[in-house]
Image (cartoon, rainbow, N blue to C red; front, side, top):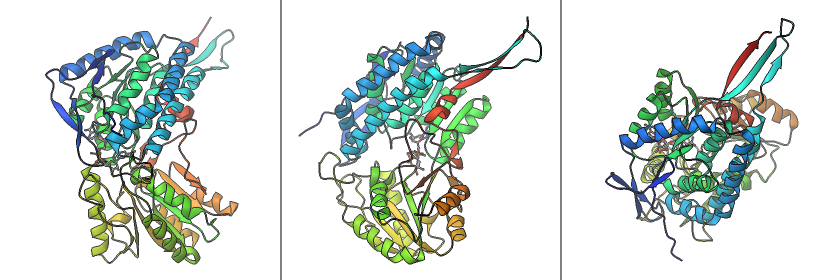
Length: 478
Ligand code: NAD
């Protein structure tokens, strides 16, 4: 069956802009490297128009009641769910992930709109007992203003959805710049919002030169809040730009998640680990990568993990029996090859995979590396791809020291059947999220975010709404 990839556009002030005399750039299908479409790149004039419309719409949207905003966001969730299969095909074509995963991601994106529709109605302030009789000390929560939201290609639906849903629920307007590599998924979300009745300008979507767009938007006095998901390097640059304007900012950056497997871990830890590692071909900021396994279980765990990883069927994400799609672009493929050859050259063992598959598209075999020396790059650099490392440990403190060794602190995991060990792990690990006997750590209602070089601020949960609100104190005297 052939699938049609829609023509990508910009979405500015309620208008879908397909090209005109703008520069175009190619959108590539990672499964075979073919060009899917040419996407228009926003000009400086487009950005000015997006900024103006965002400011104009903010004056209106912030005064739409939370109750009425919720109706539009709930309807958006409904439309996204209705269109799930079509959106998921666009996603697999442009990003490569297995279609069943893409469908689940679209549902998760709808979930964010539904959840924030309700949470926006709970942006409660408070009344503080005054010091003077007859006075009122009132705290109000207000929308921060127009937002610039930068999201990456690995979760083309959920990454923009969790920013846009929370910002709009809070009463902010938003200019989204999703990844140029996966435009149509984000545009399908914008389409659902427009069809649900979102007024023009409340959401604008632009693509083009990422550096030019981020500088223009973040430097504009119209933008009051910046949110970025992506690499630590670019996140630092975005933070500098935002600091110049003293703007509120949330950063969700890279990770290099440790998984501590204790001697008393349930045997299903291996099956869960394989499923979680190959998800989205490992291109997940919370992907489990550094497996640190207690000595009694080390050999058996490394062998079973390798055996199961080796049997994973890699291919086109639209084929029903494919278990893992390609990596999303040639940069990731190159990184995988570099990390494996570095590990090999330093004496590490490739226990499974370790090579490119075929010469079309960007397929890489899921890989397990063992017997690594401490200076192997993979032990310190985030692979952001389908590579797992397995190293042994003896004592609790040794495992925690290894888990906390890196500057990242996004997600960590542990497998143990002891409640005492689970509690000690949760208290000792430096990371924003910890999964105990589970890799399921992202939901609309729970906070998602990191510490250290993995960024600051949370998305999801009430914390995710808070990120788009400011606090106003009113001292009212008789
Ligand atoms: P990259 O650093 O080139 O880009 C990361 C993201 O930032 C992309 O979405 C890109 O479009 C955007 N970007 C790049 N320059 C920008 C700029 N000046 N202003 C605004 N946005 C900009 O990396 P990449 O090759 O696309 O991805 C590889 C690395 O990025 C991975 O190793 C991983 O650490 C990180 N990453 C993290 C996440 C996450 O969920 N935290 C998602 C995607 C990528």
